[in-house]
Image (cartoon, rainbow, N blue to C red; front, side, top):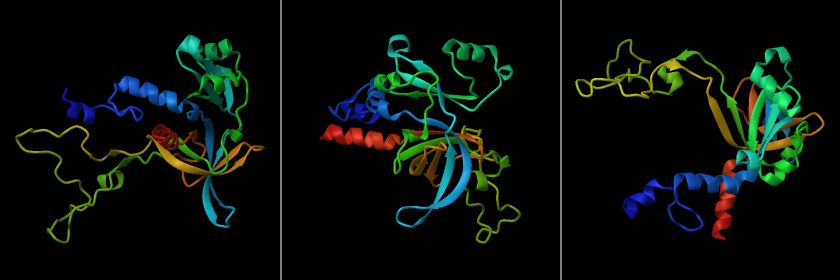
Length: 259
């Protein structure tokens, strides 16, 4: 592989300026940002409005994180990496399958409906024990976070709603009864088929989406609530995952490497 082609195809180490392997690059990236991957599982309550310190009205989404609890841990000695498994929401034992019951019994943890593993440093993992409650004060007021959730399901939708197509030019080309259609979806004899991933009508929604760089407007530790500026994916009562912003961590790492 030529040096020029290698430069464009492989990631570059910001410290040395040299291209490196994808696996090596991913390991370095995880190692540099590991302390910022910790997060919380929450439930979207709904949206409201609050006044900030400047007196401006800010739309916020209320996220309930009151029942987050540590139900498992990963250690470098046994699992080759360090992480904490959080559980959220109560559930009856009869609903769980045998594998899930064995997991909670092995860790001597309370039963939880939703589980999520978050990467942390070994030092941070040592501060958590199985059964400990993880509260909303994990985040601070003014901090930027990434919120991951499942979007609302909107059923079978056309291309104008699903992919924001413009539609047919009815006033300039004399189109008749063909206003909201996608138009041509392929070629003629060559290749004689429709390409994969062509944007067409179909099921819209119910997809995992992450909204990045949202601001934490306020933290209510007593009630276990996070007030996050703007909208987050999902319907009311949907499960969401709140993490520190990954872009902020990468920018800080890049800035530190440049001195």
